[in-house]
Image 1 (cartoon, rainbow, N blue to C red):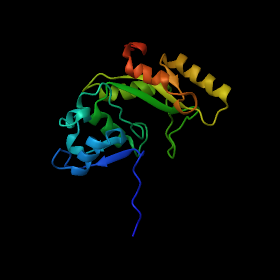
Image 2: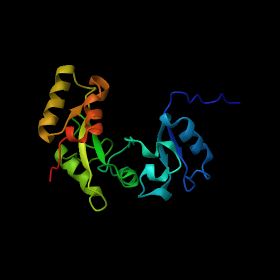
Image 3: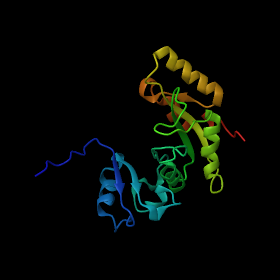
Length: 192
């Protein structure tokens, strides 16, 4: 017999394919009601095109001021572009924090060049353009392979290049990125 998997303090992704509703997904409903802070995502393709908050009409989090949805993958990655695009269309974000690894010039595991960051931003914003106008509000830059001075320089260079606030949230904190999400006026406005 296996020991129970400890869930206290862990983030949980709920897969409720085809049945995400207050009556159809009892485990998901319990997590959302009693451990909402642990829920990282709810996956159900039948709610594609809906905001996660709209699909949760019977839950207390429905009127939250901010809903954070963490995505994995990239629309630049040949293997995961469909997943990333599906998440973006499924969530229909108001704002995006772009993630990038300092110095990375190709997509990991593929022979695909990563364009300059302003082009990457334009591709992500343009993807949703037919359905919703969304803007990248900041950049989380992974600088783990750089020394502190080079990391701070890479962050400053990226801010100059894009005009957006950038930070390495693991090394230097995420306050600047949280601020731009919580206070839209603190980020760069219309770039068109």
